[in-house]
Image 1: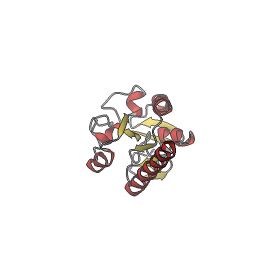
Image 2: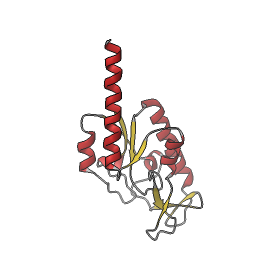
Image 3: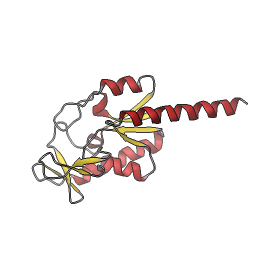
Image 4: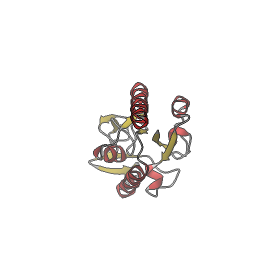
Length: 161
């Protein structure tokens, strides 16, 4: 099983502040599977560390007011290209990020308020039909992993008949 994961979740120091969101629980869940780590913001050419950014009126803006939308969208396109090439059965992304947030993201006011909606990478991957889950949805992640494994077992059984 191939799983694409936000690189910060597996311990890569690629967050805006130069740190990570390492999840030991996720590392245990994905142990033994083929993991494809991506950071859309780094893939889009942004440095680490960098100013935090949020989506405002459909564009990604840094806390300092710089429009960084093009870099975020480039990173999203590169993640899509990786997904198309690697064909992951599951994609697990970091919550609330302007890139990776699946269900929520910060509202653009830099006040910590959340709004419903996906980040630019999550939205693009979802639009292209990928199974994308938020790191906070551990039960859904487990269920999806079981589903994919069961489907593979059934397919392997059919091939051996």
